[in-house]
Structure formats: structure tokens, C-alpha cells
Image (cartoon, rainbow, N blue to C red; front, side, top):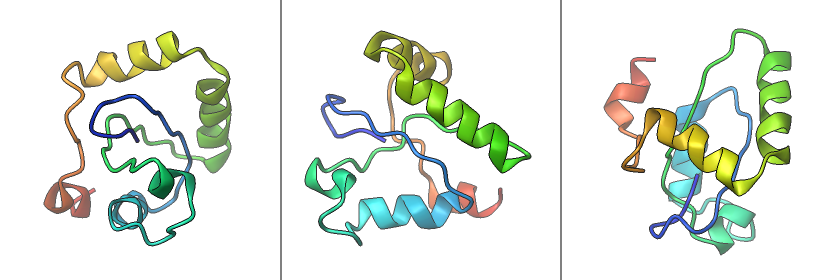
Length: 92
């Protein structure tokens, strides 16, 4: 997740992407990091068959540099457009 100017990045694991992104976009948790920094744009996501794999990937991403995170995002979303399209995510 990022903000409209792509200045702040946030990484997390969830088992329900649609619900979690909706929560971020609607600031359901007003004191959360994503709400405080207005992170409402989904710019990267990946799916894993096992939660352990997702957690390992999250740890690697969080430990990486900003440059590495940008390269990861650019690998699937060079324009940094919001990838959250509710109708499409519902079909996942």
C-alpha cells in the first residue's frame, strides 16, 4: 500500500485481501499506520498457497531497501496505479 504521492510504503500479510484493502481505503482503524499516512492505493500483491510462505515473503520485503521495494512494485506495476478493483478481487 502507498499514498497518492507514492512516498510511504506499507507491507502486510492477510488471508482476505478484498476486506483488508477495503478497511484501509475506508480508514476502519483510524489510528493505524495506513490511516495516519492515508495509504489507500494497492500497488503490489502476491498470493501464496501457504501462510508460512506469505510471512517469509513479508519479512524479506520489510527488511529490504526502498529501492528493492520499488523494483518489486515496478516488476508488476510500473505506473504505480491502484490495483484494487473490487469486482476483479471478488473473482479471486
